[in-house]
Amino acid sequence: MRRPRATPRGRKRKAAAEAAKREEVGGSSSGGSKSPEELPKESKASTRGKRVKAPAAVKLKTEPEFFPDKRNLEDLWQAAFPVGTEWENMDKLREINWNFSNLERAFEEGGQLHGKKVYLFGCTEAQLLVVKGEQKVVLIPIVVAVVSSIPPSDKIGIKSVQRETEDIIPMKAMKMAWVPYIPLENRQSQVDRLNTQIFTLACSQRRSALKHLKIERIKQYDYCLPYFQPLKADEDEDDTVVNIMFPLEPPVVSDFDWELDDLEEFTDELIKEEALPNDQKDAFKEYVKEQVREQKRAQRQAKEARKKAIEDMDPEMRAAFENMLFYKFYPLQTPDTPDISNVKVPYINRYYGKAHVVM
Image (cartoon, rainbow, N blue to C red; front, side, top):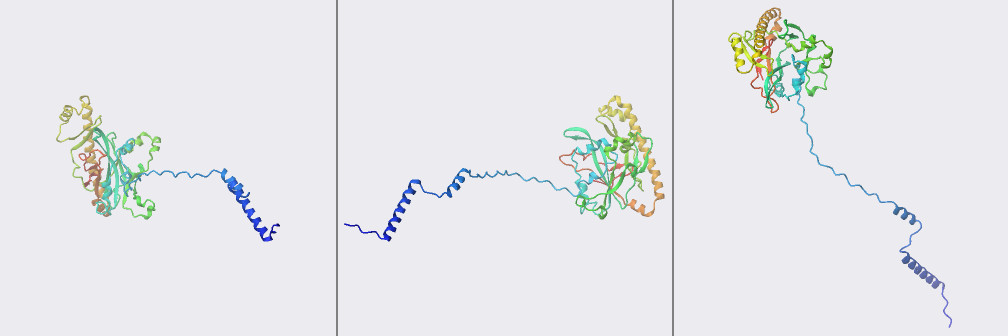
């Protein structure tokens, strides 16, 4: 029996079925076919290592560091040159963290110096104090504030026990002058545009240049004192008490009244108290005599100079001198500083006499 002849449509269906079968068999045996265009991409991708992202750095938490803001007049006391302090002792003033915030507050609203024209100069006082449980001689920085409508003086006095004569010379001869003090908040402004009311006694002598000066010239700075010619005699101008600081280690510190004390008995008492070695008795007595002679001479010269100054002074300047006030500032007591409460005195120097107010 003859098989029926396949139609064209039947042949197409059969060819399609066989093609589908071949594709199914080929895919199962190879795990899936990929075009040649895809193979290089996969090969290239498989040979390149994946980029691993580095772990982020661990940030340590640190406490913020705070610095106290500088006070507007914080360096005012340092701007006032310590007249009469030996050059080799200047650095000793920074060995102790002195605090002069009392001086700063005096210029604030409600303070004694607020809104006033003030001239400041520095000085030092040597005192035997207890520092960290031990007694030692300490240079205490002092600031003297002169409230005045005019500069108190443009002169410097040079005198010491070793010098037989006293010299009164212009400040500029010692490279000193009154200069305006600029508070920290105004340091970026032009000085001539500031209506400053604070002036400090400054010295332009550079320490690095001292090696080029003669010894006598250097010593002049050690004996300088701010000069002032008062119109009125100080109440203690005829004081008969001299302050004694005999140079030993430790020094002999005492007061001697040449009218009430007998020098021989005074000296023997110090030896008995073991404050003075017996072999220093004669040297100590001569030292006291020289101190007495010096004070009497200074008192006599002060009277003569005052009389002449009053005669030569014009009325306006005389009124300014009559209204001047002197404030003497000691550093404040802090846990970092030795106790100076028992050594504060109103005396400034032989020219200025006593301060009206001690702070």
